[in-house]
Length: 91
Image 1 (cartoon, one colour):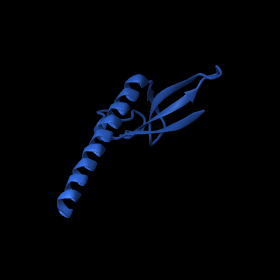
Image 2 (cartoon, helix red, strand yellow):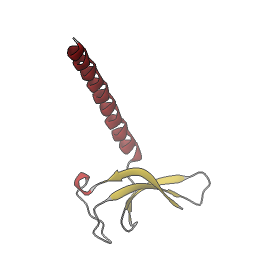
Image 3 (cartoon, rainbow, N blue to C red):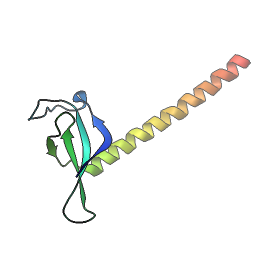
Image 4 (cartoon, rainbow, N blue to C red):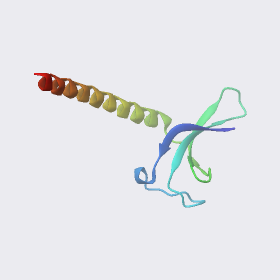
């Protein structure tokens, strides 16, 4: 059973194309094995579903966490700048 995750990788993020259809968009999905409660994360073509392999999911999760932390930091900085601008505007 293949279930798609929300993560998606665009062609500009990767220097690979699908060997089956030549597509350049990829998704992370999960595959259940015959053993109960055992799932594997796979990288597959978003267009045709061709499996490209098993990525290092810990590295992917770490990169996503790092990006989320950076976005949160930027959001906080932007909120501080907005607050300062509002104070300047109201004098």
